[in-house]
Amino acid sequence: MKKLNVPVFALLLLLGMGAQAQDPAAELRSRLDQMDSLKGDFTQTLYDSEGEVLEESSGDFAMARPGKFDWHTHKPFEQRLVSDHNKIWLYDPDLMQVTVRDFDAELQNTPALILSDELTALNQQFDIEQATTNNGWTAFTLAPKDEESLFGALVLTFDGKLLKEITMHDNLDQVTRFSLSDLKLNTDVDPARFNFQVPDGVDVLVD
Image (tube, rainbow, N blue to C red; front, top):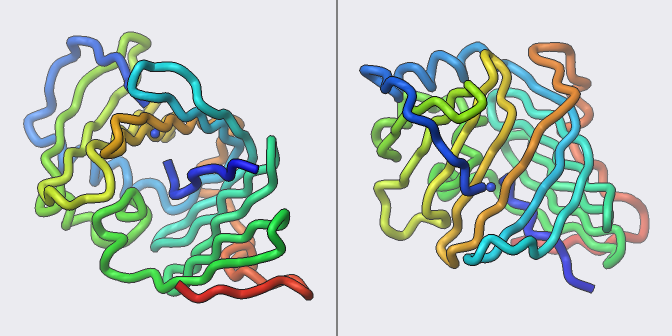
């Protein structure tokens, strides 16, 4: 059974010729500063280097700053990726196991950075460009300055204040796009959602 590549996120977004902001990093920080929490549904699509769809999945999610998220995939296979900003749990019900690791400094080179409080680090970690998409949304492309980064580029696309798409280009020339829908911005999220409780009988692996 082929399992999904969960670590938050992906897409080859076609950008329009919109005007560039004088300081894209400041504009992105401003939008992220207004996003204390976000929850809704997602569709995740993985493309190969030729643009062919390799796999597709869907589920619901919640995230809250700093560094808390719960990505719950329902179809085609159930899987959960949960963080409380101290620990990260990857739960695979089919395998009856959960992998636990620390939310450590390495994650500053991953999309998890956007969920942290270290928004001032964006300029230090990434080269950032801003553009307007063909449908009028605003897209921020983050290119890691670290050549050993786990991904090649990250695109955050907003419709006004709402984060609508997260797109990640990996180092294998594959693209993963998360399309977000039924969004609720800055509403209450039960803190218990970010504190994963290991079910009985499930093996725990520490990474």
